[in-house]
Amino acid sequence: MEEFTHIAGHVLEHSVEDTLYLVPFLFVTYLAMEWLEHKTGSKAEAAVQRAGAAGPFVGALLGAVPQCGFSAAAATLWAGRVVTLGTLFAVFLSTSDEMLPIFIAEQVPVDVIVKIVGTKVVIGMVMGFIVDAGMRIARRIDAPLHIHELCEQDHCHCHGGEGGILRSALKHTLQVTLFIFVVTVALNGVLEAVGEDALADFLGANPALSVFGAALVGLVPNCAASVVIAQLYVEGALGSGAMLAGLLVSAGVGLLVLFRSNRRWRQNAAIVAGLYATGVLWGLAANALGIVF
Image 1 (tube, rainbow, N blue to C red):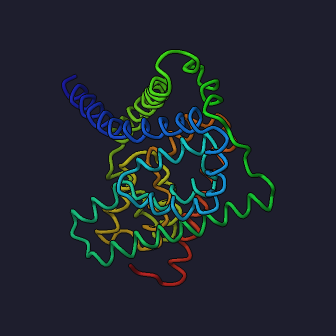
Image 2: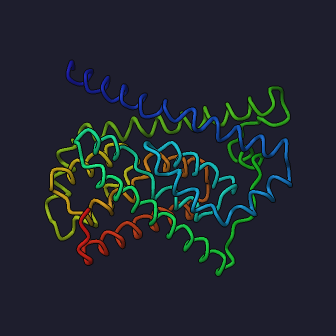
C-alpha cells in the first residue's frame, strides 16, 4: 500500500508539472483568438488568411522553441482554422519537447544540437509547404471557423455573458487543461508501471526496425517519449535515422490538445498517420544517405 501511495504521488506530481506550464500558452492563444473574433472581425480574418501562405515558415521556427507549448497553441489555432494544416504540421515536426534539455544536460556538442534542431526546422517547413500545396491542389482548404463555433462545440456558453473575451478565454483554457491533466495522469500511470527501461529495450531490440519503433514511441503525447529517444541517441543505442524519426513526431501534448479541440476524429487520425509516415520517411532517408549528426 505504501508503495502504491508513493507511485500515485509521483504520477500526480509529474502530471501537475506537465500540465501547469501549458496554461499560459493556452490562455494567451484563446485570448488572442477571442480578440480577433470580437475586436477585428472579418478584416483580421482576411489578414490572417493572406499571411497563411508563410505559416509553415513561421510555425517551424516557433516550434523549435524548447518544450511543447507552441504545439499546443498551434493545435488550438488550427482547430479554429486560424492557421493552415501545413502550419500545424510545421510546428509539430519542429517541436523538440524535452530533447534540448536532455542534450544540454548530456553535454552534446553545440554544433550537433544545432544540426539536429536545424534539420527538424527545415523538414517542418518543407513538409508544411507540401501539405498546404496538396490541400490547395485537392481544394480541401478548410473554411474559416469562428471562435464562437468552438464555444458551441464545447457547450461553454461563454459568449453573450459578462466578462467578455477574458472570461471566454479562461473557460476554454480550464476545459482543455482539465482534459490534458486527466489524460496525462493516465499516461504517466502507464509509463510508471511499464518503465522507461522497457521503452528503451523496445527501441533497441531490433535495430533494423528502430526507425519505425522510434516514430511510434515519439507519438506518445508525453515528455517521456522525447526523453527516452534523446537519451538512447546520446548513449549510442539509436542511430541518427531512428532518433530523427522519433523526435520529428514528438509533438508532446500538442496531440492531446488537437484531439480535445478538433472534434473531427477522422481528421485527427489522418494527421497522426501523416506525422508517423513523415517521421519514418525522413528517418529511413537519413539512414539510406548515411547521415550522422
